[in-house]
Image (tube, rainbow over all chains, first blue to last red; front, side, top):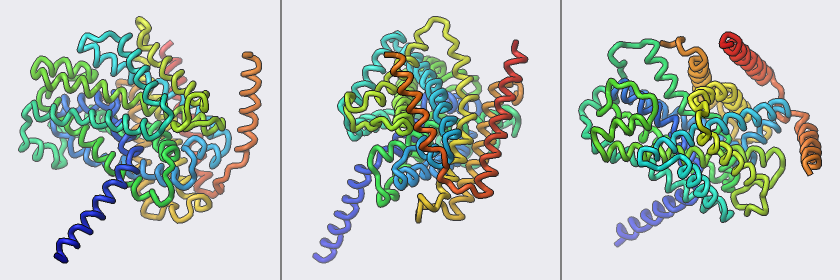
Length: 423
Length: 57
């Protein structure tokens, strides 16, 4: 009887913790899964098609990379109650503040266009015209925010995060060799051909898609909008850890799908991979296309909000998803304006979409190093962070990760300007 | 109406500039070095972009 009551007590405690996690989780999972946006899916699909399972181990390394960077935004948001844009203004003055805000506006808008490119090309596979896709996405994203509750928005976003897991059944459908995945994928090794410029390019692309500037701005603002407090930081960190594991798991399953069926084929985008997959395995290809649409949608949801939050914080407008449209007109105007204009670009005949896709990477590297460096410096500001200031160990890990990300993503961006650099 | 909108925004921008004129992060040596690095990095990137633009024409 005593053991039974002890077990019941333990069960109640664990159940309570799980319930608390589900209440407090959200920003970390949403931002991390949305990190696998249309561009990310293309990168992973191309990596799998090019190198098979050989680079799966490298993706596993990206879990701590994503976690250590993003958990800093949780601490900063929960303690200062400021988004990243406002924190940069307050911490480093108006010059760096305006630079970050305007750069974020440009890079987010361009990235939003690439999300629409991904979504329209995914649904085109099912015979749905780009016009219908753009209108449908704008309506859906309007419905998500229109009822003026952060909680509702977050739960709908989490449903789309769950759809992102569609790559897992897709991988089982193509019957991959588990033995090969373990032996050539999970054990660190170099693909046949060894370390060359092309492999370096793919490694850079994978690191480049792991951390994007909008992710820092989005998660910090989401933590503030959700109303997370200092005592919630451990849950926020767990939320971020679960999210970073999920994002890499999804990436691995994408690599497994394309690495099994399309190995040796050069892939230009994920929609092309879906079409090729449909020829071999109808359901796996269909799942790939659905996943691409969902990835673009999740990216669009987060990116458009990241800009609106940042502008709202700095300009002092009401900027919460808990506000109704009439209570925060400028916040929602920014949200819908970026959404409609980015969607409209995709519908323009002969719009330079490839150029825009390439340009995103170049513009992103002008903001990412600044946003990351500011993040570390702000986390070292004892005056505002108190006991949550970075300790020596956290600084060593974070600085190492940031230096590697800055070098690799910069080289990736520069290689977009000079394509022959790594070929 | 447009004039009023622009005027309002310009005054808002001036207000923001005044509000954040003094950075609240202590400008230690490391902070100064980091900001200098960022400035040089951005100059380098802008230089690359200009070079690319000029060689494209």
